[in-house]
Length: 509
Image 1 (spheres, rainbow, N blue to C red):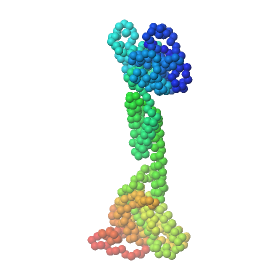
Image 2: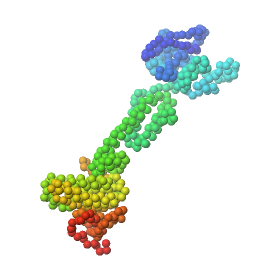
Image 3: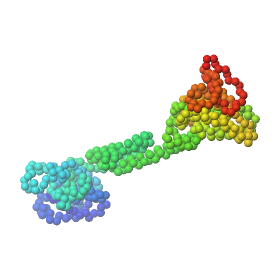
Image 4: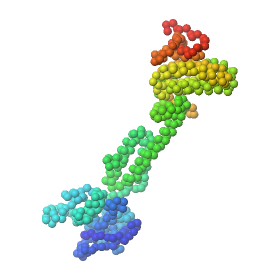
């Protein structure tokens, strides 16, 4: 058996068996000796990087199909002779073996451990040892022996997947090709359908992880999936290696591109969705708190907590225009509207300056809270300070109303402090941020106890104040809906107008 070089005379894009010109040169005398099989030793260099990954299994010299050296050795080993006749569009039939090659009849070499130059005990035996008798002849019994140069200086070295330093002996390429056929460890690309399914499935899994898992966890998941380049293979690469050991070559480029693209796209969708949601909720909160506070809530990432609901400690008050019902009956509708707008504007300005939140305008009443949605260091004191400033600046509102020829107005304020449930509540087309609880109910009832220019608060709130103003006891007052009387105090800012005396204190209270 001898090897010979061939020169292709066919275009590289042709799908048929390659036509070649035979160049035996000085090897022709081997043929004349008889009992000789001719095989070519050509290999196929990958155009992308020059690495040899396959050999052309069959050449057509115009008269016969010339097998590769490895295929000729296999036929000789199986006792076959004569020309090749069973060649299909995608492979070659040798006995009971079908050898897949694809349409170009290019055979992928599966490089095996043990068939390496460094493995002196198994793969390579020195010719000098054979000549000098240093090798046991039994090592060659029932074996296929391929003779060739392995010394780098001989010039017969190539780039191989297992050695890209251009020092891999060409003879070992053919030895690996023969071993691939003997062991039937063929390498074949998985179908386009399977590749498409893998790409789509990986992209879907990554996209869902980004959308529904915390971002830091989705990043870890992606790293586990694709690994860290040059350091640690990921789950996908490990599966690819396992499939390769089984002879299936999976596309590793498109799936990894799909993973990265799905991750980036998922992050973009998540960012845009969450940003839009935050801005929507931020604009909603801006109706109750200053815009800067709403942006602070958005940037802190605490909007979701406030939407879902939380139990917090707050201070709150209800401020009501005294005598509004009778006054509005004497005014034109536009004057009533102007009066309420001036009232709301003044209170909103003062409440925001004390870092409070305007929750509701209900007729002539304003409901404000301190400590929600943003925390307040001393919500009870902030509530009282804000109420005192409102009463102190009542003359400013009177001056503006006087320019509109509207009589002056007075406020009554009832306040409280304690735990409440704060949440974004409602459904359908009507939703709002609100607080509920006994603390709110008591504060609402205290507003009705406050006369013009007065601030009413429960005794329980006094202990939470750090700066207690002068105040008067109103005794224990029985309030509607409560079983026990509540000890109340009032703060008078300026001079309050005469009012009905408070109910007498309950004995023992």
